[in-house]
Length: 204
Image (tube, rainbow, N blue to C red; front, side, top):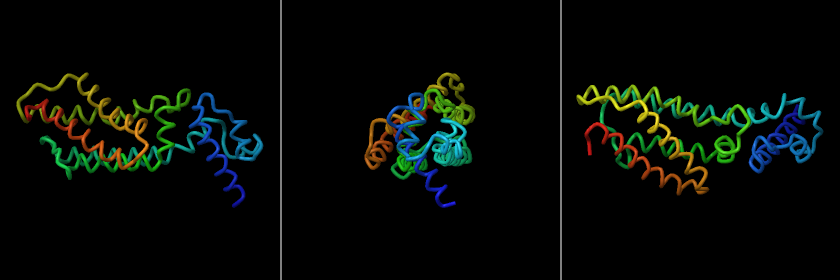
């Protein structure tokens, strides 16, 4: 049993390095097996195919990140239609820092998901995160508009805003390798994003 567990872990570690270096499409199962010191037949004892290997690597971190985002969106909805705070200890900044730290805890995995997963079921992962946010911010925008007697923002604006927010996190991950610098940067980014959101409803 322990031997099987160790073999599986070697395959996963070898796959992580291979996906990181070559991307999903160019990654070779033969190379993964060779670097793990096992036969190709041994790989199929644990995994159905290359995509199943990728799934095993990414699903737990992806689930953890999804849970963090859902928690933040739920808390935001409970707060209702109020102008967001951009102070250093605001809910949005605390949540953003928590998300950044989580992503950097699994740095290689999220780098694979965001920039090396073409050809797999995860290649449109940004759209997955956008779907989490769009319905939420459409509802929040509608509440804000009603409260302050303003027209609702165009649906495209919500779509753009959500993708801009996602890009703030993904751009950090792909350009900043130091987690503490990324945490420092995300605080400034959130101030910018919150100011834009409040500005749509008349707060400058």
